[in-house]
Image (cartoon, rainbow, N blue to C red; front, side, top):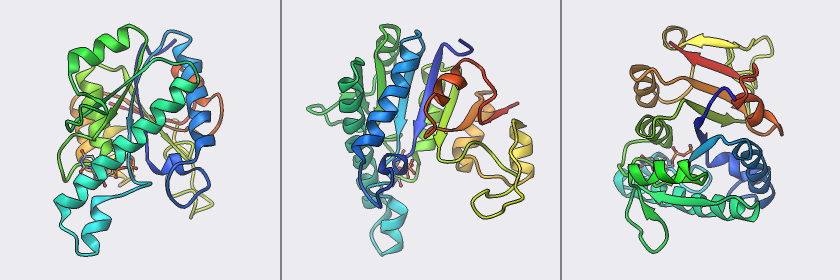
Length: 235
Ligand code: UDP
């Protein structure tokens, strides 16, 4: 295994599958199998889950809602997704813990870094819900923050596309994929990997990011074994 401890970031939208909204149980079950394949090999997996399939604070603000109020709704949405993911992982026979950045003690453990690390050492998958616990941040920032805190080897950003391209491959047919790219080149070329706050936090802490297609079965395993899947952003 190339990586011993990984932080997997899944967007809320990824959980929709082919739906327009909400959660697709089949997609969740597929993700659970992917995660199981790597935990079975002894890889420690922590997951940060987004909430965009349910609510985004910015979307609320664009319709006149108070941004902070909307962000609180977004953070709660990530807890809902975390609970759904936890169920799917447990159905697949994986031990899990859900830790939330906002206190919601009847539903999830509070985020406690040392406890999270202990869970990982015991082979449990730790899901981090509630983002960073602060408005005006994203779950990408939460993913980088938690990855640094738990000393993950890498952030694995599971998406619908199979890496970082010279242009948006869904719009530009001539776009080509990078296998490797530096943090500086991502900024210089104006490419979109994560929001700027998340991206610079990763760069400053020398934490590599791998962007890969999470919807192709077997890909997560390939990534953790060091196969050239997706795009790796490194120093
Ligand atoms: N959010 C927040 N603080 C955080 C993380 C998330 O306020 O630290 C809110 C924010 O409103 C965001 C929503 O939760 O729009 C859902 O998170 P995100 O948009 O990152 O989800 P994804 O795009 O990954 O599905």
